[in-house]
Image 1 (cartoon, rainbow, N blue to C red):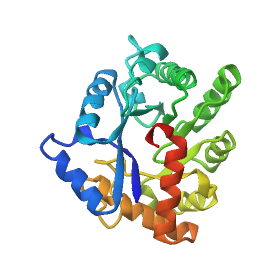
Image 2: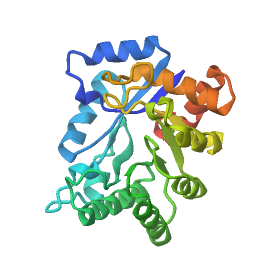
Image 3: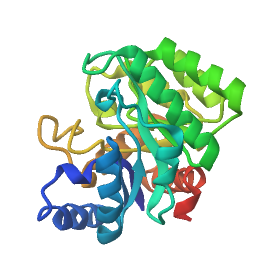
Image 4: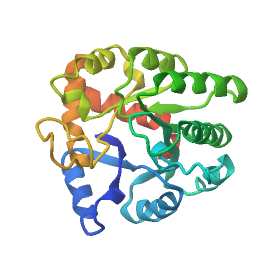
Length: 256
C-alpha cells in the first residue's frame, strides 16, 4: 500500500472527491492526507476528512498569510483536537511568489513551529526559494523550544537543506517533480536521503508526474512518483511502498 502524504482534496469539486479516492484505492494508494492552507479552510477540512475517511492537517500556507492577522500557535493547536487531524501546516516560506510579505511569512512559520512543539504533531513545511531562512528559523526555534517532528514536503530545495533537516530528524517527501526529465539534482538528493526518512506525495491537483505531466494531478498518480523513487533507490516497488508507508506511520503516529 502507498500513502499520498500531501494532496488538496478540497480543490476538487465535492461531487468529484469520491471518484478521486476510488481511483487512488484502485491504484494501490490506501490513505491520503489533505492539507490545510488557511484557518477557515482548515476548520472545514476536518469535516470533509471525516466524511471521506481521509487524514488532514491544519495550518496556513505561506502565500495565504495575512500580515494583519497572523494565526497564533494556540489558535492552530486548537484545531488539532480531532481524530482526523494528524499534523500542522502546511507552513513555511515561499519567496518565489510575492503574495505575502517575507517578515509576515517568517512570523507565521514560527507560530506553526510553536504549535508543533506544543502539540507534538509533525509540521509540514513548504520551502520555495527560501532555503537559508528556512534553515535559520528551524535552527533558532529548535534551540529555543526543543526538537519537533517535521516534513519537508514536495522537496525541490538544496542538498544543504535536506542534509540539515535530516540531521534534525526530519523526513523528506518527493512529488511528481522527481519524474521530470530535467530533475537530475532532485533524484540525486533523493538517492542520498536515508531510506527511513523518505515519503511520497502528489501535491494534487498540482505537479502531475510523468507520464501525465501538464494534466490535473490526482492521488492515484503518486504510484508513478513511487515507481521512480524505487528506481532511484534501487529497490522494488513493493519494498518502496512498505518502506514509505512505515515512515508515514512513524512520522504521523495518530494514523497508527
